[in-house]
Image 1 (cartoon, rainbow, N blue to C red):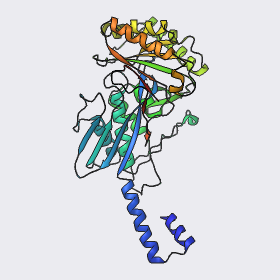
Image 2 (cartoon, rainbow, N blue to C red):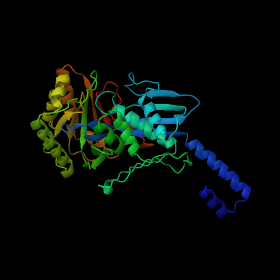
Image 3 (cartoon, one colour):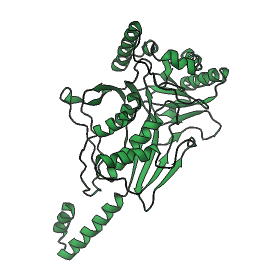
Image 4 (tube, helix red, strand yellow):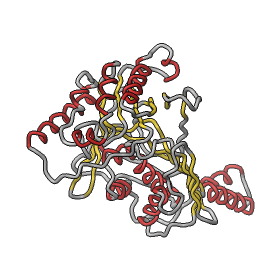
Length: 390
């Protein structure tokens, strides 16, 4: 290590002492490389008209720790893990296997520790988050650096995700040092780009198919936005719209609404957000399966939300609120809007015989990254159905 040589020269260490220090540093580095933790955010796809294209990262995080071990194991933590497998079928494991495959290596014996906070199978991107987390963590363990290739058409929008630490020794070189491999591998599994792109890059993302694969473009998120998420207890995630063609007038409607949606974020003016989140393509099918979405959305609007729409294809509902500044808990005593909207959504759900909980969180500007620490804030009472995330 050049740092050790410089240190030895500065302090006049003899040759044997320098060699011993080199060995100690290498041993410390090897130990550090054996374990890595990554965080991946929840996501809300579509936002109404942006089907399979638009998505928003949310400040609710799953954490995945991978470490080399003598035997394979998967440990699950969290309130909603009954349906999550502890075998090779686990999506975190599959993401890790995909990362090692990209590097031309077989998946080694690893211990997986999965801390799940994103509600599973509720339209908030939990499945794609697991795969992304496994891929990113495994890339770090294989001493890989992920970088999005420059794009000739818009090089200024190049996004970089570095999964590298100065404590990691040189590992077996990977055939690609591209976070693009993560994006393409995840989209190839059939997940909504509206979930995948913001999970990787954060913020509001527009994922578009090209001849060279899916590409993602960032839209800035204004400060002060808050999301109230109604998450039903018993409903399972809706399926994507499977149609080959749509009526021309409906397609035109959605194109216009999608443009208006992006304009709300670009201009930081959400006066027309409810109009912008309207959709004529998937909503009829979504409401047929989840009729509670309309009255829950209407209740959020009546309580003061700027707009509301299904999360992806349901069953969860997102209400958008403007105006928060400062810390969540510092605001909660004086600003009751979030609580009012959350309670209204819960009541509307109950009237439809759909019980659930409210998660209150901000949009988040960053996506999957290494060694992030997040925590839930607010009431610790397990019976509380309104939960804050910071």
